[in-house]
Amino acid sequence: MTDLRQNLSTGYLDLANNDLQKVTGIEAIGQDITRSIRIMKREWFRDLTLGIDYEREIFVKGISLAQIESRFREAISNVPGVTRLINFRLEKNSETRTLTLEIDSVETELGSFPYSTGLGV
Image (cartoon, rainbow, N blue to C red; front, side, top):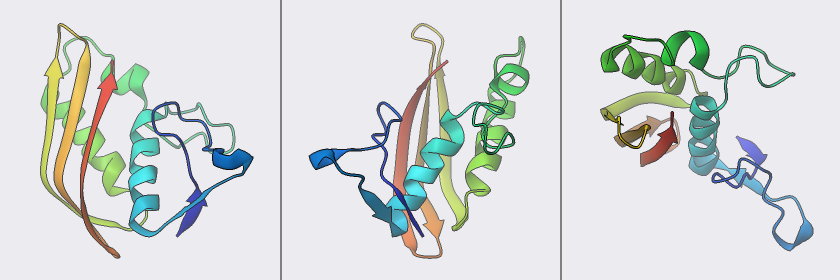
């Protein structure tokens, strides 16, 4: 698996040395996980099914953390190459309006790696 490297803080392509950078293997899968949970469904014109429907599935009054966790788990499990998620945790901080996602081990066809990210909601 090969992809163009993104700056995961900004979402923009990484143009180190004024050139496109490539990412492969487990690093590419990790980048795809980040992209799959940060992009809003219908945002990317080339694939309107990509991402999470934050409007209808996350930013809904009364939705439980278990329902949100289920949707994130599904989005990550659908990333090509991901085979299993071990110790998936999603924590909500209402004061800072953030979600913190931690996975002890993302099992893939190429090996495993820990994954952690924060999401502003």
